[in-house]
Image 1: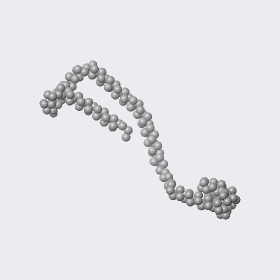
Image 2: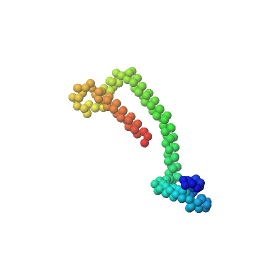
Image 3: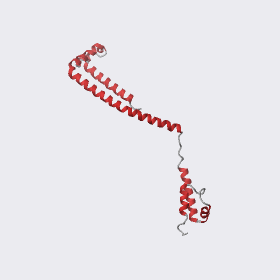
Image 4: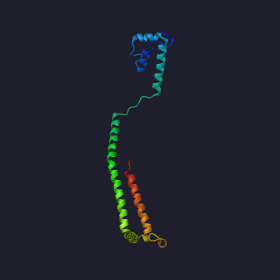
Length: 168
């Protein structure tokens, strides 16, 4: 045995690393540690470090098997819903594009008739009773009010539907 190392130090280190000291070691190795200063210092320091590690690192708290199973089922269900939802989103986008194209085509084809119809809507709904007569003399008629209001209602209803169907 030299003053800087011991021939059995590797055995003691291996047992300490695996957590087998002192229960699973041979009696002659325990006797050697009692007599060898290097090995006994190694055991003392390793045990202090292991005790400090146990105090600072809490043991993992495992949840119940039922909770783990429930989370796995929830993840699987959400993945299936997302997988099914992709084609539905594509269909919604396609329907929106078709609606916009049809609306643009109708406006190009029957634009004058639609403007005349929208001009008559306030009279049919008697909206002129809600707005002062002086307001109409300054604008080009009730259509300048009804069209933006209807467009705003349509836009806001689309936003509300989108937010209601969005992932929660």
